[in-house]
Length: 382
Ligand code: GDP
Image 1 (tube, rainbow, N blue to C red):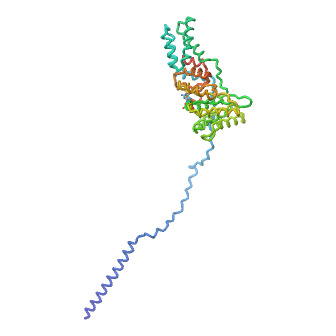
Image 2: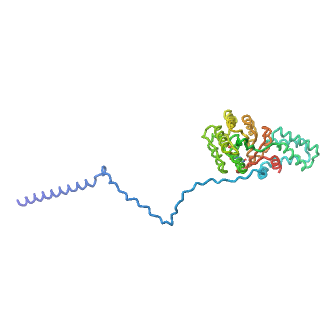
Image 3: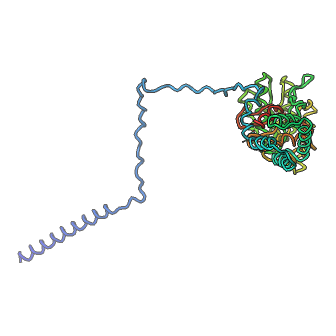
């Protein structure tokens, strides 16, 4: 009896121990699998930012605030004698023309065929048919009358006739001075890309070298880049540029500049205009308006038509159209260093009846030379 009672007690104890053990096991597992879905991690407090370590004094240089750097003002060279300086460049570009003519004219027998070849050479160099025939006619007569039959004599006659054709009697000074207390106003016109803005910048340099005060007018309001380019040219020689809003009225920019030029006793206002597409009547009319509006303030003293010498006959077409809209008073022939067709000098003067006043002979800032007929012909026959 006692044994069975003990047995029951033992079984009860074992069951109790198993039950307690199972309970403890289940609780422990439940605690382990609990997911931290709602509980967010307590905010981690950042350690206070470390004070930057003080650098050793001798290693750190205190930076001075940069003082605004004034653009360096260049001292351009005067224009006198530039054609001489740039003669080699001109001679190089025109060497085939000069050599061709000299070789033909120095032949023992100057028959019709040779004279025709001379004509062809001149026409190929863009001299134009009429001036070419005139030159050949005069040269033929002269050689016959004067009995010239040696190469040196022929060269001399050719030189003289070419100079006469280029016409040294033209007044080639650029009218940059005004009168009655007004500034001189030089208007530059021409098709885009011919070198207008570059020419304005270069003329400004020439005037500054002559100690004249210059104001630039960016009347090409269609291209902001053109106005920037002009302003840079001005800054290089300490000249101001008057600009307007992009797409604004070019005539009003030109007027403002001339008015300011008058108020500030400026010697010359140089007006850069937009590259009028000479085929678009509206744009060309606008160019006429620019001139008329300026003249409410002061007379325009010079209208320079800029022509790219490398464009040949096309340049002559442009000359004709521009001359209808504004009274062109002089021609600037750019890029003469880049073409063998120097005859365009003669052709364009014939076309417009006005002289070539300046020629561009390179891409440098001072590669614009006052045109001198004798120097031009000498470079040709070098
Ligand atoms: P714009 O559009 O008429 O104002 O023409 P730019 O003044 O911008 O000139 C057009 C390009 O022609 C530029 O790259 C100039 O450097 C170049 N140029 C101007 N004149 C001469 C010159 O006499 N000789 C040469 N080789 N390049 C020139």
